[in-house]
Length: 439
Ligand SMILES: Cc1cc2nc3c(=O)[nH]c(=O)nc-3n(C[C@H](O)[C@H](O)[C@H](O)COP(=O)(O)O)c2cc1C
Ligand code: SF4
Ligand code: SF4
Image (cartoon, rainbow, N blue to C red; front, top):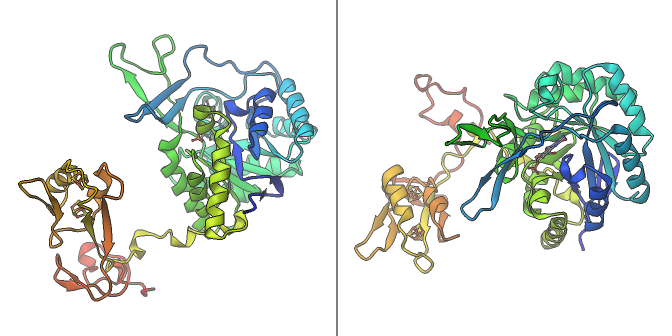
């Protein structure tokens, strides 16, 4: 059986599934039950400075986007960092770590952008025996207005400065959690690295308003008739997170910087995708909040079965496997040709593919009088819109034309790899790239 053990920055856990810093890791009661359910590690809900804790709203703190089947696709929240006293959290962290030495316990931190409060809280966390710290430079609401969270994460110079303070003040591994509310994820990732971070974790939540009540004209969630932007997470953010993880993994400067992947992980497959794009482990929040702690058991069994089927014996064999296949558009093969093929045995004759292709694509699907739908190869540009709108999985597939085969649309035979920089149409007149040697 595959070995799921994970070693992230020297922090060992029985599997690569950690709970992200959020309500699931807010207190001892939760974390003990999470470990009993099988989670490999947790990042404790973000701790703030000593003194009176922050105050959360006492009205609704979530907004949501649902699929047609009411499945939760995206979650938006206006919750702050922990609203429990620092000393209570520290006492509980110490007790949990003592009783669960084989699980990863990382503590998330957010204090004002000054050296002294950072040094003070690091000392207190070290005394708990925690395995590491995660610097929360990501929360986009409430704390950002107070100069913390994403207010730091949006300024690379601040990230570098605070990371350096922390690096110099502790022996614990330092993970810097990044905000996606920026233009280019490489700037904050490189800043964290310059400051001495051992790893980055991403993504924190995305600035968002999920909906507006069109009777009261108030953004939701509504607090006494007013709303504020919140942080968006859940399955809907996974594509954004995957891209940011991949950007860091394939960037020369950050290629060796360990990454903890976060954002919409709901199944073992999501986790594998993050790991193939360079994440050494994954963190989960919304899926646990939606389905409970036991969801990790499906993640563990699914990952284990996948690894066995593939013949992978350790997690390291997955990490980064897809990174060499992530390219810029100008490196794609413009001579690669596919055609849509409809499986008449599974087609339910709904006509969605026809409407989509006829009205918004390339008029490449024919409909007979008795509603038989067929692809016209001479028109099909292979956009795969029909595949994506078809309600029957695998009813429409894209078939690759082999080298030398005739593309009926262009009247040309399929030729070897050719990218845009080397394409004959790439002339100064249409704003081309400089030619590059073909692969
Ligand atoms: C209600 C709620 C509270 C959160 N609080 C924190 C927090 O205190 N610190 C932090 O770093 N991230 C916090 N997050 C962000 C999560 O840790 C995670 O980065 C984000 O939800 C994306 O992961 P997901 O799609 O699995 O939920 C919070 C998320 C939610 C939904
Ligand atoms: S792949 Fe695109 S062009 Fe071809 S049939 Fe489907 S929708 Fe039409
Ligand atoms: S969308 Fe799919 S099921 Fe519907 S007609 Fe087209 S191929 Fe058949």
